[in-house]
Image (tube, rainbow, N blue to C red; front, side, top):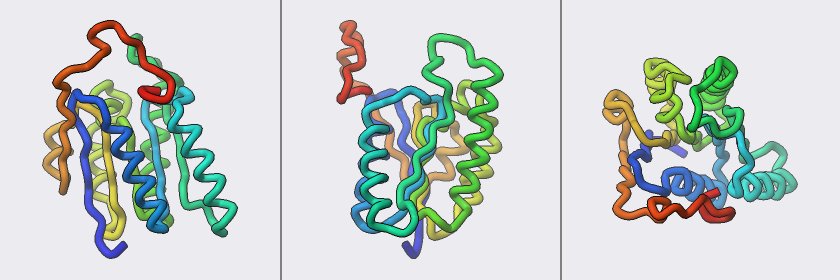
Length: 181
């Protein structure tokens, strides 16, 4: 890729991670290499299983992995306060993500839920801003998550805000396997 951009998917609506994973699949289909770092998440979601299967298939045809997926969470803690181990996992993940971004190995780097990690105090906003500014010109970077800080929004080349108009969670429907998890 000659020239990358910084894309931001934010807002209270559903679909930010799904959009980023869709972009990852498109990039892989075009022969690009992809790194996905998921902050906060540490649980087994259906997309993880699908991406791992895809990564195995791709690695059998290529000498080096074209898809790397890492999770920097210890399970979903959104209904409790983060513990020191949650902060340590997120900050270690930010360092790994920065290394992936600047390694020259990946064409597309996705930092899923990084905005939420900032909002919850797991990673400092200024460190995420520094990572974004360190993006090599030929790498596409995607950051997802609600609560995007203004400083991060200002750096983005593309901002998509998912707007919740109506959601069935309001009626008590739980997350469904294969649809929301």
